[in-house]
Picture 1: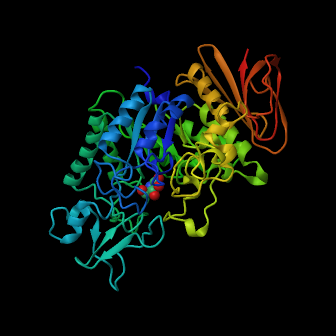
Picture 2: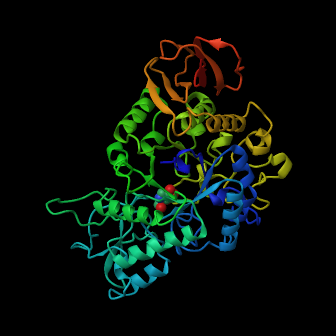
Picture 3: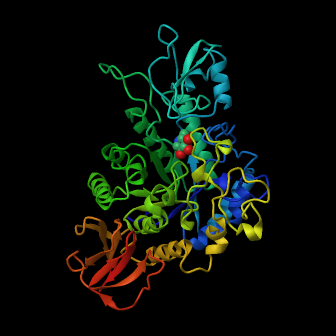
Length: 519
Ligand code: NOJ
């Protein structure tokens, strides 16, 4: 069996609103993505995952979909999407798109029809229930964004379910027509040539509010058997197509046994984002435990997907910024992400070491306050390109990060000490190294408590990777760690000179990561 492309890929998440604005309205668009594809290709990424660009009232910035088979005019049109696909493929970059099967927008024509009458043929495409006595909702489920997960609709005197905002009604996958209509939206994009899907809240899909017999109540985010059945059907659709089309799920469960259940049967998701990993404290033992546990629960042929940033979480440089150490930790985290066995998913701007933007209370626009990590990419120095930092000639929809002058792509390009240069170096090494590729075996090493160390090996190549997650410098005896002498090939410390001599002891500064080629 040949290795599918996505096992060797680095996937770069594009949040289209904040990537590049080609038409000057202050919001990024697909034409902007097209003109910056060169950046992604030069970085060495193999695929982009595009967050939603579908027609949407934007209550949840596109995760409220009003049409699953079109492009919102704010972002462009289908012709621009096709151009994006063609140009990406010409550069060797695959395209994964976001698919939101748990809920639509309340403005989707399906929901407009469903809410119009209890007898509408689309009524049961959504989850409607009678309330409890006293005008109370059908159960006590809460929505992720706060408040009840039910909204009363006076016209038909029933409540509808929404795991997120009231404007995001849940789809009822037990309805066969709805299921067929949604699967047809996958085929629409597969026929156009997309390489796969990132499936939004994959663990919530297919949940219904009626507990199994004998169970008094049931949590909303539970992964019901019905959801696994939906994912098997999704996998079946992907397998109608050639080219190893891929499904990666956002499986936001913090129990790795449940997480593993989505990727171990071989007929559901190909990969699932691991939020236990994303939410880990900056602590070597904690990371080691998460990696070891997932590896044990999801052995080959299951395949891990690692990510440490996305559009829903504070940036690494901010999240791990105790004592101002965030930027160094973000660099070390790049080595972690790119050095592990599995597919790394990175978020746009992570390669620049961007922190969160400062968003004054009056500028907050997201329902859940996730604006800081969604700040636009600074492509140019503001002193050269003006306050839009090359992202827009207009007024950016969210503030640009502080210090865009030094963090901008144009400022980092050509600077060997920059984060951008480190990411390029690491991705290039990953590409040429058998040990870091899909066939590379991985062994977690026991040594210093504060040092996360692991070995990757294939075809006679042996690489030792180590990150010092403490505030003190450490010395790692390479032989005691299970290695032996070797040569330093990468350090995440911009001040470290990578010499060509063999070393027996690897000294690591606080929050430094390094790769040693064992000789
Ligand atoms: C997860 C998405 O990443 C997030 O941005 C969104 O708000 C929810 N799912 C609801 O679709």
